[in-house]
Length: 77
Image (cartoon, rainbow, N blue to C red; front, side):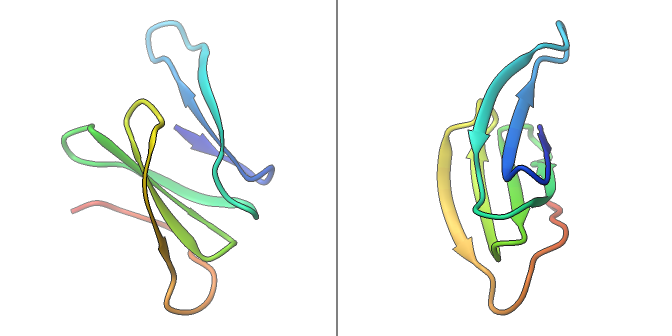
């Protein structure tokens, strides 16, 4: 998955390198994305102050507002 200044997350096929799904993910730029260690989930963070959790195929799971400010990166542990 990739994210950009157009507020969109894009899910790509590693096999074909083709765009699989484009998601209007945030109301401002997408600042970071990360896959979970088991590859079942993806998290995205945006300049809109939200962390959004997705399934690996791009279906929305949950939204979490930041306590304060803009989120710049995300990581699973």
